[in-house]
Amino acid sequence: MANGMNRISWLGTSPRNAFMLAGLVALLVLLPLFLGQSWLSITTEMLILALAASSLNIMLGYTGMVSFGPAGIYAVGAYTTGVFMEKLGIGIVPAVLAAPVMAGIIGFLVGWICVRRSAVYFALLTLAFSQIIWTVVFQWYSVTGGDDGLVSVPVPDFFFEITNCYYFMLAVVSVCLFIIWKIVNSPFGMTLQAIRENPNRVEFIGVNVKHYQLASFVISSVFLGIAGSMHCVFSGSAFPDYAYWVKSADMLVICLLGGIYNFFGPLVGTVVYTVLTKVISEYTMHWHLVLGGIIVLIILAMRKGVVGTLANYWANRKSAAA
Amino acid sequence: MTFEAFAGQTLAGVSLGMVWFLIAAGLSIIFGTLKILNLAHGSLYMLGSFCCYQVTVSLAHVAGNFWIGVLVAPIVVALVGGVIEVFLLRPIYKAEMIYQYILTFALVLIIGEACKMIWGVGYHSVQVPWPFQGSIGVFGLSFPSYNFFLIAMGPLVFIGLRTLINKTDLGRNIRAVTENREMANALGTNVPRVYTGVFMLGAWLAGLAGSLWPPVSVVALGSDMAVVIDCFIIVVIGGLGSLAGAFVGAIILGLTTAFGLYLIPKLAVAFGFILMIIILLIRPYGLMGEPE
Image (cartoon, rainbow over all chains, first blue to last red):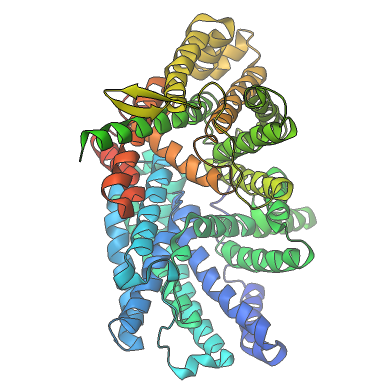
């Protein structure tokens, strides 16, 4: 348990790290110059997925709450934007802004019940709620389009040009990630990490642990809602699959691949996961088999994820050199 | 609702519940002893279904081929379970919960894909076996006799497991390890062997359920997650780690599902979850569970 605290602030504010971050941003801004249409579209999708995974990681990595149901909340965001635009004819700006609000409200109601229990029961409750959301989306034909989904969300022409869409998503995702970064590194975020390390001791020093867990749940939901909404704008559609448990599992695996005890873990995990699935599915039809094998290997050999393992490696090298 | 429909749904619900009980019992025993929530338990069930189907096809002209399948398939699944426990689960008992979840989730992917490679994506069916092809009349209504056989299996397995756990040496060791792993280890119980045994027992039960259900339904991919989610609901309703809880929970969920499908088919899927949430709120550790 105690392996997260010191490493979570890796990539802090040293000049070298600031330089690396600036380089990364420059690379992302210049990316459309090098990438073809299809890869740019994949990268845009990666940005959205990275935001969703980072939102989940507020709960998972920072507060130590294993949620099986992030996809449910993600779908709430996507469908809010989709239904507002396609069924109610509301403009894109209010439709997008409504998504985090709706996701936050649903997140509050679901979280209010879920945080009463911990560990296995918490995980199963979140799974139950996401399956309920999936059922509602799947069955409520008149509003959500049922299993056909929403397929003709009237997104402005601006987004049809993939480069525009990419820059828009890059801006939204960057701002959101910056806010998440600020939150998890604030005193509030430190309290969340303390709860992860030892909820009992935090309770003893007078912190209402359940309130903080609920706050973590709601914040996570708000950003998941934004991610869902962005995906709806990006693809002009929304499907019940968004709420399905497979999508939640994808997000969990992404966080784990990158490393849950690091802010950049879910981002790296997204890149690794997306590239892996694309590459593997080109070579074999049975990519689930390969993916499953890779996950098993990671858990048996590289439990801290890509970023965690690298961070450890660097830390060891540094201490060896000193 | 007519009496005929009522009786029909009750019968269907209880027989479904009894098959679920076999799976949920394994899930619950594994959780109680190994403290691992096995997401791949539904996959073991599905593997059992496919193995039993394979036996009925391979021995198409042998009398009683289904019963040979019922005998063989659970053993195959138990062996697979043993391999999983020894090589994959053993290294991660001390790891955090999330890693255990994700590892068993990876097994869902692997077993699912393996079944797809071997048996393809189509639906397979298994004939209702001799001597249960006929119907039995109750109150002037007739019901398929195979359902009565399934309903009988539940209490049979329940009593068998109770006897195993309460009366045998193996059961004594299981209880000792569940109660206090370190102490049992210090007193000479071979804890790793008990773990492997319990996991294989759970896998065997899942395989048995997988073999028995196909004559009523079909053998197909995707049953793995559907089943495991239902079994989660059952063990949470009944209380994780409690055998009696799994039994009661299975009957409750079976009836809820059967009547839900009959009355409001659209929302039937959600009923189980709503039931689980209500029970968790009023009895946090399930109907028969004990606070940790």
